[in-house]
Length: 288
Image (tube, rainbow, N blue to C red; front, side):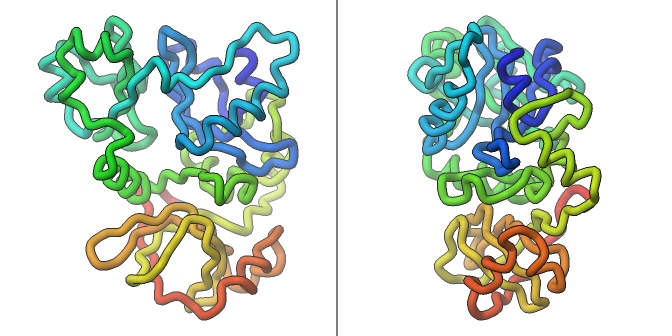
């Protein structure tokens, strides 16, 4: 708990109150290395993040362990992670959903965490044995299933919840991903890695780029790809998933065309984007 308090953007003391947290793990320069959903499981704090980031994130965190009595390991070897939109299977197994005030409950080693700002989705985690004892081993879609992953990522896009992958690692500061609007940053917890840059960005009001939700036309789209909109704004794709014949996406864009050469490497985004994209901006479920 104390170790993570000095590493991530949110106040990990809330984990002691049975709350799940959304947080960024950043470089000393404030660039986001990973976004984590932190869950206070009885077996230890579980950080949910893309599989491709597990190894580099553990390696980066271990550099700060020093004399801390903490063990960092890949929980994928011992815990199964699933997701669900309804609680019928859990109710049949006698497992209740967390309330909006707690965000996390646990029953005999089976943890249920509400997805940040999305009360209709839950993460479920536990050992294979614990899930089997409750009759849940075959009732919940696994996070590695292709259809589940696609639908879950699309739901994240519609909830305005960003994710970081290898292709976008160390590209954005937390506020560019709207973490200050998603309860992903504590500005009162004290020092942590990257805190100086994140705090300065907030207090000086220099948030020149934000996360937007877009509909993109058919084409070859990839995470991290630069793009330029018809209105002159430029940036990079953070998440993109096919939806029907088109695509839905989250992208970090300059707040206005005139800021393209002001904020960090936004000018590089614009020069690399080529022709403008016929994108349609879609509403987010929160105010920018």
